[in-house]
Length: 255
Ligand SMILES: NC(=O)c1ccc[n+]([C@@H]2O[C@H](COP(=O)([O-])OP(=O)(O)OC[C@H]3O[C@@H](n4cnc5c(N)ncnc54)[C@H](OP(=O)(O)O)[C@@H]3O)[C@@H](O)[C@H]2O)c1
Picture 1 (tube, rainbow, N blue to C red):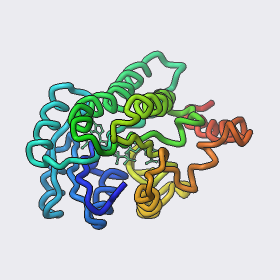
Picture 2 (cartoon, helix red, strand yellow):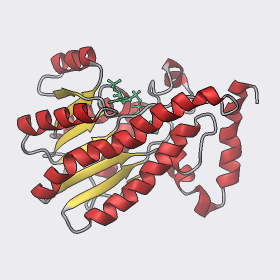
Picture 3 (cartoon, rainbow, N blue to C red):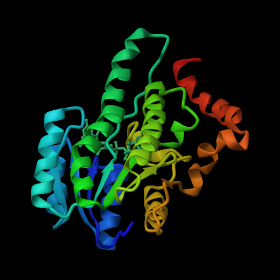
Picture 4 (cartoon, rainbow, N blue to C red):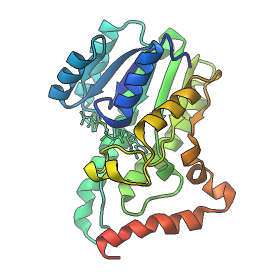
């Protein structure tokens, strides 16, 4: 994708990977609009980054998504790319049925939120006859992290959905890309994740990903080196080994 002239809306751009990508794409020449629920944070980011577009959006709410879409398209009639970055990741103990609340919230945000945002912009992009839809999964879509079962459900689901979306939009001029991050130092699971020695530094992830996004044609999957082992675990015959390693985190629940 052309990262120098695009107009990109990033739902879930108020922190972490979304904000990192927003900053890097702007540096490259793109116009960027970020969305999220935290109005105060959007206001501060707009003040700190003149020219950065902001919009309030809650991807769990149909009306909020429709409002945000209308606002973005009214202000940016050249919108050419949408990135569905919004997500949450919460530990769940499946021995306690009380976990279900987390499952529901995670599916509502990560999986249904992705579909809601894509649905909101697809008619516009099809009418335009060109553009990019980028969904966001995770290495966890390919080998689950047993500490966060619902998160894995949603990321595997978004992968499957993305494959279908790409097949259905083939020939329309709208490309469908899946961003597959590894563990990256953000606050997705709380401030402790920033200090995790196994997490890829945010700036390194952003640089490598944007380098891949800029390739022509855009790869169907944006897969940095760090996530390749997990992405290709089944094909490589390393699935059981990686799952065993990731299961080590269950010690947090006394397993
Ligand atoms: N960091 C990693 O290790 C990693 C690895 C693989 C995949 N990912 C994926 O990358 C994406 C971004 O995560 P991150 O690591 O950058 O974490 P983050 O800093 O916590 O960012 C999450 C973003 O999602 C937004 N969000 C959450 N709920 C929302 C809702 N209901 N409506 C609208 N926006 C919502 C947040 O904005 P507001 O709070 O302002 O609404 C924020 O901008 C997620 O999809 C995550 O699954 C991250």
